[in-house]
Image (tube, rainbow, N blue to C red; front, side, top):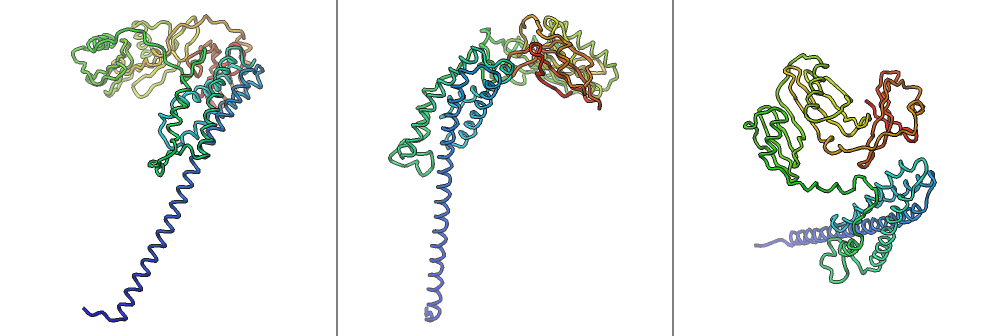
Length: 421
């Protein structure tokens, strides 16, 4: 085949232009890739630097807290500790490896922050007590050791002896990985335990040692509790913790591993006009007949033909706000439509005999003048952990009809919590 000279020159020209364009495209994108890689590398290195700085600041604040006593300084240190923990948690989340390498470190930082947050309220009047200072000293010991380890690791990263966990470093022949080095540090952190700590990271109470009930026992308990036909209960779900749920015509019921009835839910339509007061009496009688002691009706709302109530247990004449049961009664036949005892099972226990240091009259001074008090009772209010604080609970109303429930600490006379109803 004959190709004219002019045509041949055009083809060569176009091919050369294409090669040049491809080369330029490759060069640009290689440069962009390198830029992205350097940005990511800097981001990881900067994040680790921030972790080191946050833990160092945490260590310093914990050290000072181990000697603090005044309310003002104690509160400031709690805020500093909590802030350092939040900063460390956020920057650790950016590091390029899984949480396995940070499990103990993250747990320590979480507990330190949660303990400081809880101490902010308990120390508001007189500052840290001896027990709190001992706990902060224990936390400082761990934080100081962790700071030293992380600082040394940072220096090794800067010297190139430790590599960041990035794709381009996977096949590198020299240098340890940051994740492997963090695992070595983790071994020295250990579990964090504090005297009297009952916050959200506290270990749950040990099992009672009782052998979990078998499914047939759970079925019998559920049937007797709600007056159902045992033979019509069909196993629906079994959880790892031993909780078993059974289905029946129109609903389901759940029983935990220790034989406590957790809940009942119904699906049938309800159309009835029984009085709310009658349905409240049915609910109270039902609970009393099943071993619930003195109860306080905290709320009662009508939803169509169903009355839904919250009952709180009463101990030594004091309401236990978190020790509660929710129950709904159908307005047609007066049967139990829904039941939830999870909060009662979790929080029920013995409380110390009520001994308020502040009178109700004195506690009322903590209520703003814009609110009018309709009722007041002594209450055990839940803390951020699993403890309780003796308070006066004031049911209030605003000028616009807004309902507000204010808790006032019975020891200090200061507002403890506010709930908009």
